[in-house]
Image (cartoon, rainbow, N blue to C red):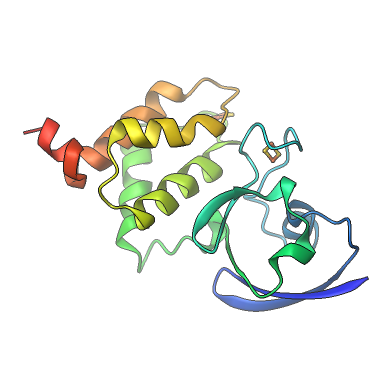
Length: 164
Ligand code: FES
Ligand code: FES
C-alpha cells in the first residue's frame, strides 16, 4: 500500500491505496464521492470525469498514486452557493431540462464548469467539441447543447455576439 495525499473538493485527504487502484475506485469506494460514475472503465464515456488541477480528466484512467499533492474536484465540490459559474451551469441545465436518468450529467456539468472557468469566452461550438468525450445513453444531447447555448448565449463572447 502507498500513502497518498491530495486536495479533494477543497479539503486535504489521505488514503492508503494499492499501486494499481484507480482514482475512480478511490473516489467512489473510499471517499464516497459517488457523483463520479463507473461505466466503460477505459476512457471512452466520460461518466468518471473529475477536475484535476482544474482540468477535466477521466478518473478511470488515472492511478490514485498519480494525484499525490494535486487538486481534485468532483460534482460534490461544485460550490453552488459561492461560485457564479457553478450556479450558471446548474441553472442552464435545469432550465433546459438537460437530464433524463442523470447518470452522465454530473460529469457533463462538471466538464462545462471546468472549461468555462478556464476560458469564460468559449463558444457553443467549442464546448460541443469539448463534450465529445461525454456519452449519454439516454440521448439527452439536444438538451445538453441547449443548456450550453443558454450559458454562452448569455455571457460567452462569441455566443453573446450571435444572440445579438
Ligand atoms: S468510466 Fe471512465 S471514461 Fe468511462
Ligand atoms: S441522462 Fe441518462 S445517461 Fe445521460
